[in-house]
Each structure stands twice: as C-alpha cells, then as structure tokens.
Image (cartoon, rainbow, N blue to C red; front, side, top):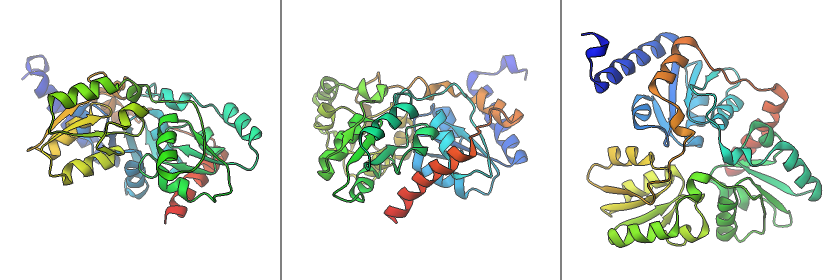
Length: 313
C-alpha cells in the first residue's frame, strides 16, 4: 500500500515501528515527559516527570538519550549523564518559567543576601543551577527546604507558586523569585469551582505550580508523579486534574475504570506540544539535535542536583 493511501493512524503506526527499529540499531532510549502529546508518550520507552526520567537516563545502558520534553529537561539529563549523547527532537522547545530567572539576575539577588542558601527548582537553566546550592523538584521541594538549617536565609527560584506552597507547608521564611508557569497560571479558581459543580463526587488534584486560589480548592496537591500515584490508589471514581492537559492521556490509560476531567481546557503547554513523531524520527535517524554544556557549568550544576540527592538520602 502506498503511503498516500494509508490512514493517519496507519502512517503513525508505521512511523512508530520505524523509530523503534532505529532506536534499537543505534542504542538509543526514548524518554518522554507526562506533558508530551499522547502519541509521543505511547512511543517512549519511559514516561515520567523530570526527576524520574533523569534517574532512568543516568541508569540506562543505552549511550544515546532522546529526551522528548523541553530544553531544561534535556540539559538536566546531560548534567547527570555527561558520558552519554543527549538529543532533543525539538531544540526550540523552551520553558518560559526557566527564562524568567537569568544567571545575572540570580547573581544580583545573591549579592543582596550574602550567606543565603539558594534552592532552585529544576525548571531552570543549567547556568542558574550552577549558581545554586540545592536543586529540587515539585515532588521533593518541601523536603529539600526542610534540610536547610533554620538560621539560614533561603532564596527560592524561579517559581513563586511552588515557593509559596512550600513556604506554607514547611513554615520556612523564604525570598521568592517572581516567576511562574504560564500553563498552570491559566488554570483559574472559577474553572475549578465550575468543574467541581459539574462533577460533585470528583477529587480535585492540582499541581503546586498553580496559583494559591486554585491550590486552596484542591483535595490533593501533588507533582505529576504524585498525581499518578494518588489517582491510582484513591478509591474515588472521578478526578478533576489541575495541570497540563496531556497528563490525562496517561491517567486514562493507567486507570481505565476511572474518569478524568481537566480543570481547564486551556492548560496546554505550547512548548511541550512542539515535539512530534516526525521530529523524534529525525532525531533518532540523524542524531540531531545534541545537547552540549560547558563542562565547568555542568560540574557546578551537577553539584547542586547531587546535593539534593545527598540531603534526602
């Protein structure tokens, strides 16, 4: 059958088969974030959040890592796996949140607070991580902050919403950088209330990058990995999900007897959606677009990430 005679589903299936064949031949492993398109999640060898995929990448026997996500995620893989080739299918897939805190801006803030401990969310550039004392993920941010000695000032960058949530649950005073995730910021409290009115028995589960009004409406506040775990273990039959809408693809696949409703249909990350099967195919076939880092930056960034692991055990 000529390719032009195939249905879109048949063409996608053939492309997926070809990508997997090439990946085996080239010793590549494909990792996708929970916010990627459904077809990219289905293609991937591993799907997860930033922490899960970086850990898998570091342990993978394959020497080539194809990171389906945004730029800082692929950078983090390179930080932790310097001896491996890291490819990102769409190099223009950036993160506006990460861009909100530049190295020079962070250095200026640190100069104003000498001796403060800088805790940096992984949604940040390698250069910003390199200036940091500790990194954290949304799943372990509160635990990381609790390890900082009580007498120390804390600078928390770059997400103000995650920082505010951590400040509330830990009771620690922190200087919060005024950054935010535009995708989570688009989820409004009114939308969550409307969704709950339409689904009164549903549990509301939201990401801590959401604004304070949304978080206060939630039954559970969790990272993406935490959401997946909570929904799988909960006895509830329906859930209102307050994060990027593509996580619903995985939630529905893993929980076929349960109902999942987005808190907002507008919570879609344009940068995450830039990665397509065709771009993954090109990355695996041609070995494009390789992520490289200055070695001094990589080493200093790795120290901040590794310290997070050390303090949490």
